Image (cartoon, rainbow, N blue to C red; front, side):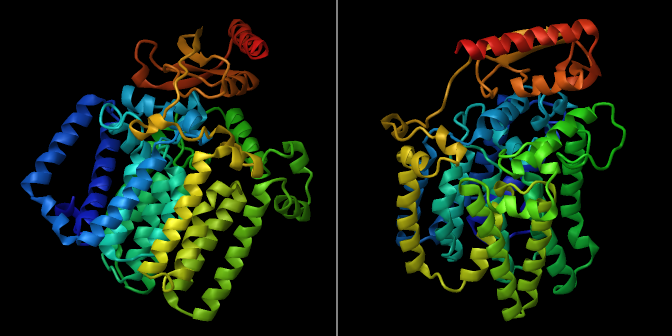
Length: 525
C-alpha cells in the first residue's frame, strides 16, 4: 500500500493503518463477486505473514523502549479484558452479525435492503471484520485489536492525550461497531494534521475511508478539504485517491441499497432493486421518533411547533436529554474557544463540526450520531494540557470506572435505566479470562412467500444467529403494512439479489398467517 500511495507516517502503526485501508478496499471490491470466506481469509493472512518477514517489519519493534513496552503491555491487558465481555450493543444483534453472515456466505448482495433495510448499510468496517471472521477472529473482536493498535500509536507518536480517550472506547470493544474505528481513525488523522503531516493525498484518502466506515463522520473529509485548499493550497490531484474511495463507497451503496448514501433516498438512478418507497417512509418516521427516544408518536411530533421541537428534545426523560444539552453546550464552548484563538485551522475544525452537527440535527438527532463530536472538542481543547503523567493517571482512573461498569452492569441498570443497551450487559464471568463471551440462541422458524424461503427468529426481535436468509419480525410487519414482500431476482441464485413486489391476495394471507404465528409465540413466552 505504501508503494502505491506513499507513507502516512513513519513507524509500525503507520504501516498497520495503511494495511487496514488496503485490505478493506480490496475486500470491498472482491465482495461484489465472491463471499469473504475462509479461502479469502487464508490467502490474505498468508500474504501478510510473508510480507511481514520478507520486509523484516518486526525490526520496527526495536524502536520502542522497555518503558514503552510496559505501558503497551499493561494497557493491552486492560483492553483484552474489556473486550472479552458479552456484547451488549443492540445493533450487534440486529445489524452487525446478520451483515457479517451475509458477507461471509454471499458477499455484497444486490438489493439486500429489500430483505432487511438495515442490511443496506454494509459498512466497509464490517467488510473488514467479515474477512477475518472465519477462523482468525470467530468471536468478532476486531475492535479490541483496533484499540491495541491505538495504544501502539499513542506510545509511538508520544501524543499522550489519546490515553484519556481509551477507557471510554472500551465500551465499544465487544462488538464490531463502526463507531469505534470512526472515532479512533478521525482522532489519529486530526492528530496528524495538528502535528504538521502534509501528506494531503493519503490524509484525504483516510478521511474518505472513515466516511465510508461511518458516514456521520462527514466532518473529517470536509476539514481536510478546507485545510488543504485554504492553508496548503493543494490542487485536484491530491484528492484523487480519496475520490476513488468515495466512488467505491457510492457504488457499494447503490448495489446493496439502491441509492448512493444509506438511508437517504437521494440520487435516484431508477434501479430496479431499490427499496419500496413505503418502507423508506416507515423507516424515516422511525428515525424521527428515535430523535425523541421513542417517547412521542410520529403524529405527536408532527404537531410540534418549532419551540416544541427544541424544548422536547432537551427535556426527554432519562440520560438522553442530558447528552443533548451537553452536546449543544459543547458546541457553544467550542465556538467561543475558536473565536478567542483566531487560528485558521481551529476555525476550519469548528466549521466542519458545525456542518456535521446541522446535518445530524436535520435528519435524526440521535446522540449516537454526534458522539464523536465530544471526542473532537475535548481533543482540541485539551491537546496542550495532557502530558504523559497526567494522561496515564486519567487512563488508570477512567479504566477502573468503565471496567466496573462492564463488570457490574446492575449499577448501570439501576442508575441509568434509560440507557437501553445497558440492560443487555451481562457482567463478568470467569470463562472470559480465556475465551471471549458470546451469546448463542439458534432458534428460528422457516417460511416461504412467493419464491423466497426465509427464516424468522423464534420469540426474539433480532436475527443475530438465525440462518440466512432471515427477516426480523419488525421488518416482516413493515412489509405487510406496505403490501409488498422481498423476492429473489433469480429463484435459483441468492447471489443475484432481491427485489420487492406487491403481494397477491394469497401471499397476503400467507404473510398474515406468519405474523399470527409470531404473535402467538410471543404470547406463549
